[in-house]
Image 1: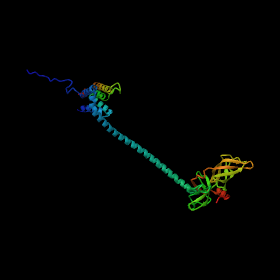
Image 2: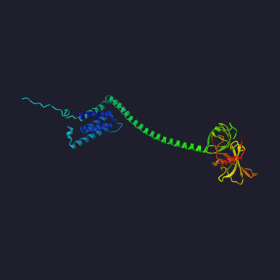
Image 3: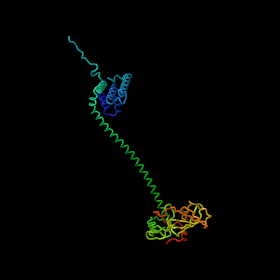
Image 4: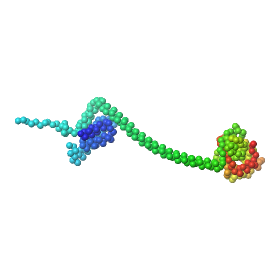
Length: 84
Length: 272
């Protein structure tokens, strides 16, 4: 339940809170939910991405990178118990 | 025989396998699709959210700007305190200086008086000043202008007013010096603010030489601006421009400057 709460909070923070708080929340949640950074990145680009600002959807890319790192760390440290 | 059916479980949607991350990822992708397929509906859907975001941003900005104002006020307060301390120190120093100047003035027994009338309000080459016998003014005191430039002597004293006869008055003469060699000369008033002197032709006096009179030391009274020579005369006449415009003086200082100047005036003829 706590995971869900923090996931929802980081999702809402994309709209309401400063970006730094969103990053911190997402990084915190990514320990338990590796897919959340990717989801948050896609959501941020859905809201804020404009082709005029840049060619690449950077939020989604950064989210994907953090998600990949999170999966890597979890697999290396064998933290499967966290994911259960 | 009763057959046992295992409950069919969806691997993707079962509550046990769907994590929060998967759920929000699915929602994010869904929203992305909505934006790509129906952008108008997407922005209609999220406009209230953006408005709320803007309101929150404004409130947080005002909150943080309040902290910024507090910091600015603190810095301004410190700067003002420093400035106040500096001004207090300067004030102290000025008060001390004023006290020392007042002490000097008392020691010198000088009287400062404003000029009430000057030519053409007063007779030519005289000043009427706002200090008299009630203020300690006595006849034959010397009047000095700004920069300790001798101007004249007191010739009449009333209770609250006095008259200063300037050195430029006709028939007023006094001893003085000219040039760097301090050649002794007799300075005569020519009237109308003009001063002149005669020196032997053999003396090398040039335009620009400073003319001074005895006082406490040697006090400059003017500068030679022209040297008039007559071939039939053994002497030359020096036209002297006073150091101060005698008719523009606004205040004078009166005091007894010493025996030298006094004795010089004792041998002179002044206007009544």
